[in-house]
Length: 193
Ligand code: N9Y
Ligand code: NI
Image (cartoon, rainbow, N blue to C red; front, side):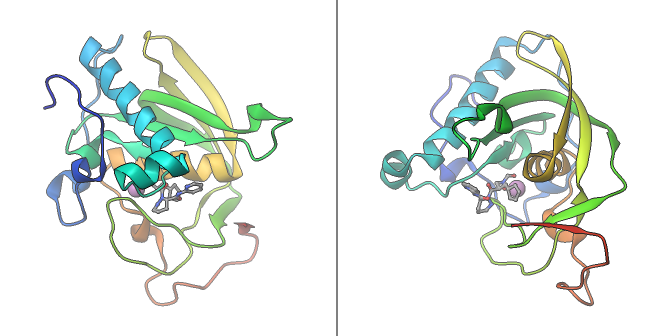
């Protein structure tokens, strides 16, 4: 446990092989405790720092769009996502938030994957292959005030949130890759470039 909070860096992130990454994380009390609120803030700040070229270089951070508490060896159902919109005219296309006890309520039949495959800050190797997920999801979560939200996400935002919710369920991205043929894609899977 991190008693008082230091800035999160790459040294805080556990790597594959660590059992916490394979555990199902525990729900957190709602409203979140002061400690969990602080943790969420630090997780989001880490993502912002990691995407700031100057800070990322100074702190030696690998750029990331999402982080889940289990990656810090904290087995709690807390995730942070920071995906700035690519279109400055439409900031609402991005997503930047901390979610407590997030839950996928429903998902599309349509599937999607990133054309580049996926990586993970807890995985220090390239794992080639398509990570096929739902193209759209409806997610409920609680914010730092204990208020409940229900949102629909699609495409890249949906992929990121599914990657993070997988972490709180002990699932790694490569669990979704077709073992025999990593680059095989069924018809109808949307490829996000
Ligand atoms: C951090 C992962 C989460 C994403 C991987 C695929 C979907 C969610 C992460 C490893 C290195 C690259 C990095 C990344 C990025 C992308 C666009 C813009 C800026 C959380 N993680 N990455 N994975 N960076 N940066 O493991 O962000 O995609 O659980
Ligand atoms: Ni990850």
